[in-house]
Amino acid sequence: MYIIFRCNCGRVNYSKKGFKTKKCVCGKNLKVKNMRIIKKVQTHQEASEIVQQLQEEIHGGAIFTTADKIR
Image (cartoon, rainbow, N blue to C red; front, side):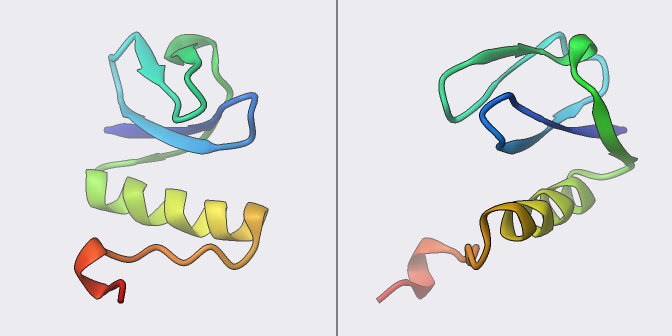
């Protein structure tokens, strides 16, 4: 099971249940058990998709793609 939560910087993250810490891209080490859970999902694919959707809603228009598609 994976949990989805938000860093104080506003970035949405996910972590496997049972992990104690997660490092956000802003550099902050987050204690997962102290974070407010947004959603719980079963697979990392679901977690990744939800994080991408939430990031696009929050920050508007961010398009997630793979490096080979960027020209």
